[in-house]
Length: 397
Image (cartoon, rainbow, N blue to C red; front, side, top):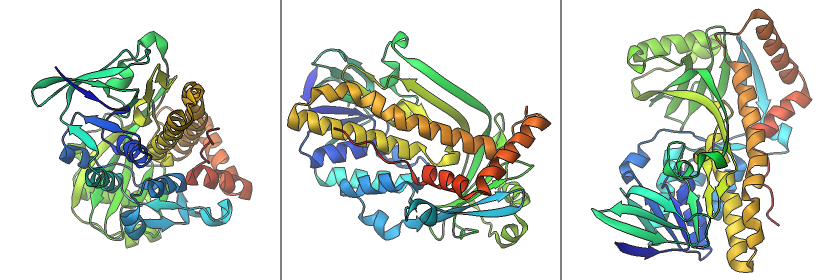
């Protein structure tokens, strides 16, 4: 068995693993990333594209913002279309000048991959059978197979950045974790198309036929979503059927200006809220989707992963530079304070904008009234805006 050594072993080469690796490398802390898939597979995942200001700042800190700053679309607001009525949420005005940036997760991942390659930091792709060991000791290690040979990776700490289905969380004894979960009775049917956006800002539409979202990746590439039943089959949705349904759910003036075209990608994403506590087990720390999932309605998934990365990076920085090992046990509680607030906002946006199949008339009226209360009040709009641009990261002291 071949033995390797590093300071921080990272499982998963998605955006959270790569971002953590980049920040640690810049700070002079050695990392090695293990990824089960190929680089092309990782880049083929079509995911989120709305970045909070906190994540934008973190990417700049990591030195990987050049293309994002040049090509990303800075948005100072978004729009709610509520049964045909259009309501502007002015993020700039309501949050003291904060904004979000439209820049696809695939592009974030590509930038991070290239940055890691440029500095010669180690990533082993197609690493199979990764297993964490001795996580509660001061000498944890990983075993894995690489290029047909068994390997061992000795390290100080392990970061589990390998997603909801990854091995990191599954390696923690079940009786050590508490799971909080809600599965929604619908999914999002999404398409990617090389068409100009229907509006210069994102549009979240509530309609009696179901929710719709008009998003974008650039001035020439769009991402649209429709609420569909959880059991829906993507093969039943032709491009024409999708565009026809989208037009029905949008206000008339937007539907008339919608430019349609062939889809580049089409898929259905299930919706769930999921949190596991605690987010650490000994010297292994869960980051991003390994520990929590949010419905995409509030655009929080990737951004929550970034705030986890920021917390873990700043703790490890103080551990290595100031021997502040006392901070290690605070990782989970610090992360979870922000996570639960984002879970609440994502749940709220989902509940307010979607049609639930089992919702009775009373519940429907309550939801409509609650949403009207928020959008018709400046205080309510400010609450929406503050959550949408992202709550501040907690300082590590």
